[in-house]
Structure formats: structure tokens, C-alpha cells
Length: 336
Picture: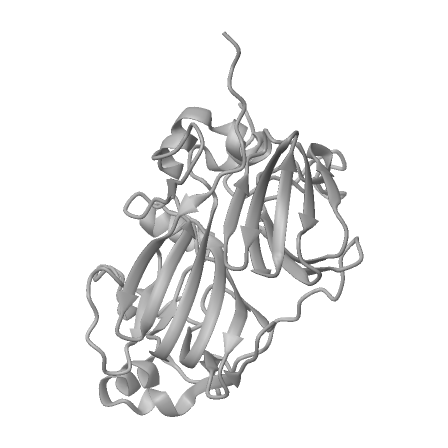
């Protein structure tokens, strides 16, 4: 019996509403939050169930060797209409040691922003743990929160240890590692439910990995290997490129050696696999499994832009330890 080949996957979004706005999970494999496939012969299966069955066929050999049956990234659309609670996350090392989890490196891409929109990123000056705890209790911490005005098209890396949030009216696409490790630092006087933050993750547990120094902006790479492409994140955990589609692109397995997620920012795009077409409107997301290693990505509107998310394998020779050694993805170990 011939084995069915996987196909580009659409998911039903999962919406969480809060007092300050809402979050829509576009792609998620978190256990307590799993997106469900919308159509095709895999319809009604969760991403977790597909990973359990098809494993490396979804993510690619090298990604599967590192992450196993966990899909490595998640994608959310965030709409803020108030004051998003300040939050923080640990890196891979602390997350693995304390919580048996991945860390939560994040990228925030601003898709809409009103004139009052601000991101809260770190501190306006250096503070310490004592000032933080005291300021949380009496509200004085608000005076040292660093705020950054934003507009559509702005992009920010949210590294581990960086306190972050948002205020005003804005919309954000968040790409992050597949992890639930967000710790609430300051809720701006709002009552929080357990569905937003796990009460087991308190600010006290985060005191040793918070960055207490003044905020320093992270610079993204200015260009990519093709016209109309810009690197937004180039990490071992994930790569994010913004692609302004002018002409169809022929993408093969040798180009990425990974799954590929495409999120349409504006315009209309299409992924063509053999004779089938998978169209993307603005705000829609498509996961192309690694097994689908030959396809066309093209625009269906004059002005079309998409985010491309992957976890790429990047071998690097270490001339000091072993000239023939290859770098591995987070979590990979040598075979004994």
C-alpha cells in the first residue's frame, strides 16, 4: 500500500481573551494548547498527534534529532487594547534544568499600531532585585519601565531575561520556541487568571535570570540572500525572514532542510505543490512539512509580504576543539 504524502497544513486558530486584549494561537504544540488541522485527510488531528505519527516527516531529520516529537516553534497573533502584563522567560539551559522545557526566545513583529502604541522593553536605567520587588508592591516600578513607540513593520527580538509587554492599541505576530514559560512580572493592577499565567511561575523564581540593566536594542540583519528578503531572526532555535514576494519562488529541500511556516502579513500568497494550490490571505498561516520538499511560493496580489519561519541545520566547524566537528541544534547529543 502506497504511503500517503504529507501536504501543507492549515490550522484552526485557538483564541484566548484577556482584559487587555487577546491571543490567537496559529501554530501550537503545547499539550494544553494544540492547534487542530483544518482540512485534508489529516483534518481534526492536532499538531501533537501528527507529530506522534509522522515525526521527522513533519520537521525534517535534523530538527527531529534535536526536538523529538515536539514541534519546535509556536506562532501567535496578539491584539493589545490596554496594558499587557509585563512578562519574562528563561533561556534553554535554565528551562531544561528547572522545568524540563525549552526556553522561550521570541520575536515580535508589529503588524498594526495606533499612535498610542508602545512596547515595554526592559528598564530605562539599571535597577536591582530589591528595587524590583519593592516597586512591584507599591507600583513604583512603572517609573523605570522602558517604553518604545512602534509602527507597523517594526521588529524586536525578545531575548531571555528581558522584561517585556505592550500598552495601547497594536497587533503583534509572535514567533517563539514551543514553550509555556512566561512569568508574570507586573500585571498593572489587573487580576490575572490561571489560563494566562501558571501561578507556579512567579517573579520570585525569575529573579536570578532577569536582566536588570538598561535596555539595549537588538539589531537585525539588513538583508538576505535574495532580493526582497530580510532576516529578522537567525537563531539556532529558529530563523525568521520577511519576504516581499514579487515573483514566484521555487523552493526545494536543499534550500532549507526543515519544515517551513508561512504567515501572510499583507496581500495574498499561494503555495503550489504539484497541481494543488494552498492560498493565504492576510493574517493566515500555513505549515509546509519537511517532506514537501519541492514547491512554489508566489504572490497573488501586487503587494504581498510573508514571514517564513524554519529551524535550519547550520553545521559549523570548530577549528579549536575539532576541525571536523559540526554544530548541533539545541538538545542534540552525540551517539554513543
